[in-house]
Image (cartoon, rainbow, N blue to C red; front, side):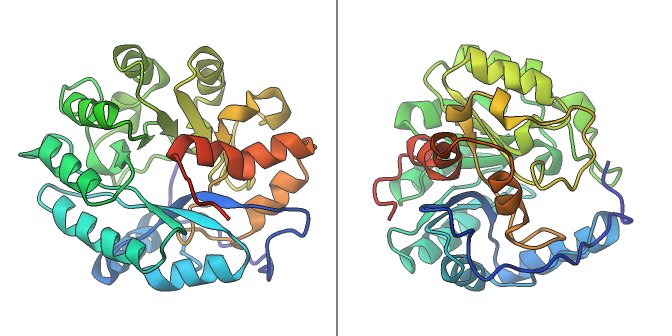
Length: 297
């Protein structure tokens, strides 16, 4: 699905969140040290789209907060073994600079030595869950490498955000997401770890129907809207959020790694015909419940 011909959209940046919104929590924001951000931007330029916002981690937080976002869930992922501890320490320091406004999610590389210990150290130091990305980290959720990580998360009552949907895929990945990802694979985890809270980003594209069915079946599964409601990717199944279990959907932007205006998805959500109660759940309440946020303004 990903290719270097994806367009950059020149829609206008809004100065603030839509006036109708009281509280917005962005549940999907990427942060990295500068050297990794540069490498990621080069990859996107070569294999996907041009990232519109060339910002450092602190600039990302300052941008979103100054535009009306109340709280940010900061995500990162280790692209290879041996990076996780350094990345976790980096994110801990950044969260401390924005007390009460950033929830940091730790990283670990599935299968690396001492992976459960790395996760526990991150939790003990103040990070509030784990982000995993099967496409980038190239792990099969059925391989056994991830279960010890899930064990630590479940025993600490910490959530997992895991990109396990098959799309967007790229031939430049070291693995084929269609072989290692899938709603059926995730359902095994939901059964084996019945107290573990899991969020699948992008509404599970391209298996949106299957993931819609899973959130109706399992109370421990959430989805986020990232880049799907923004109407950027082609999706064979039209998304009608009114037909979803709205207490299991969270707003996420993928900022800053997007090729369009930061508030494009917020505007699309406003125009989805959702009730005020449903919109409030998607924009903030569900994230408060999933990430156990105690201080959202």
